[in-house]
Image 1: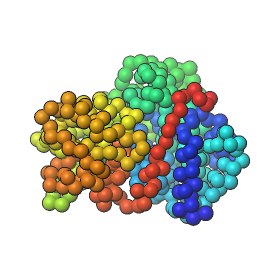
Image 2: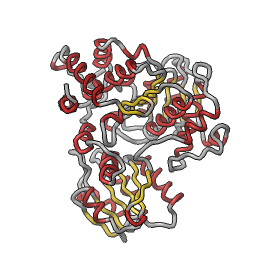
Image 3: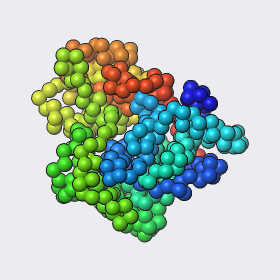
Length: 432
């Protein structure tokens, strides 16, 4: 199978949507030889910050000399971002070979039980990490946790960064219900690390850990002041990243007896961490600044607002915003629009994009004095704002990936491979 054929095969899996449940993933993994049984994992779930926390954990353990696998989603530009070993993306040859193997395994399923894109990619990653003899895999949950395909593993530690509003149609219409889905990654006796700060969510996580006999660590802002994190200069913008760094640091501490890591390795790992598309500051022609941030839900938008007030308080940016229709568009606009002097509404390159007509009223209501402009595409929006001193592009990770490619910040066949992120979910009770 060629790489192009492998991408086409993965595209074909989108027909089967996203069905939360573990039965198919367990069956597919068994057909592949249960590779998850040969690996050690840190399983990371949460509404926001889980990708950054995964990147920090990977950087720390790689700095300590371990061969570290990293599984995350969605990808910004290239599919290979999802599956990395020591921050090297899976090669096209390996991806094509494993896709061909998955295709033969998928053929053994009845038509009405066909595995989904995410289930197949999850098992593909497990096979690759086993082949690469990874000593530890940083394993990010996709959607929720309890019924997410990644939950077929038993990790060394379960991390739940926080609980905020997102994916209510699939995870539940209260924070407690969302927390219960995330808490599904908690396994008997396995330590739990969290920075959840909402009372009902905390209660759900704590009670789940107690029932499972799992040691429970609550990380607060106080821990950011302790050694080895104290004084570390994080390369990722945003005060919230310091809390993510504390979560990563205390996860490493919780595993110290099984995987010793020196304080210096923790500090070096945090100092050198890379994670694109989150408060990523770049320079355009003439020294003009552009900030890219995947503020795709309410919590993300609030973090972006705080960062703008902290780092760029003297500037009134142009806001280029594109949001998916199934997000809290009105609330995101309400948070971000008041920060801008001019707002450019752009579609996300997705069938789920919100239109300018849907976003404009919320932006106008939140910032009546701002000029609001509609662009036909992100490329058009970047042209419209090329003369502006400071531009913020925000609202969807899909938009950020496209922006990175258009600005020359990332290479790859992004126009095609970004479309692999498309999915349609089903309510949580459709498969158990």
